[in-house]
Image (tube, rainbow, N blue to C red; front, side, top):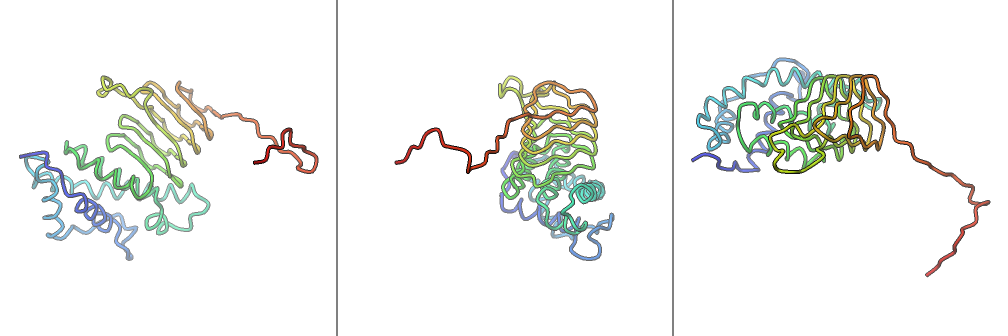
Length: 256
């Protein structure tokens, strides 16, 4: 019988073990090569795939075959985050500590499994990342590399989002749909972000036909539902008033 739900705790443990395989906390942390997993891990992974796919053994082999490429891509992501964040000290800090990097790692593993047509498991992996980082990336999204998430809390990236290379996202960014109509489930509902785009904190970009052109900058708190040309700068203008307290008299002094 297929479509048995894997044990959530077992999935979370496996996600952590895959991370340690890719990034062992030793001199091989940033080495592009990986050591082949031990047999007990292969058995554990195969056990998770059982009930989700007709041939769990072959699916496990296929998944393990994606790990070297995933690590190569993740190292590019980590270096891009390091280059983008003045507060980052070194690559080890990015890999070991940064929640944005961990969310990207979970997405890339989940996306690889999603490409193997395995149900449920990809969402379980990205929801684990969502739980511990506050970053919600759907495994069906297509995200280029390198990719940077800074801080990251509150980021939402929808299922049919397409993101190019060298894209930076800050906390609170939403790449969402204009409508939650179920009849549109099979259509592209989320935006396309082209190469070299920066999306600053709190920006919201909605709609499957919305394209942010390459080399554009979307400022904080922008609400965007239409495409913008390459090399655009889009910003939200609000009025902030600063007064001297000694010269300002409250119009109403209401005290309870």
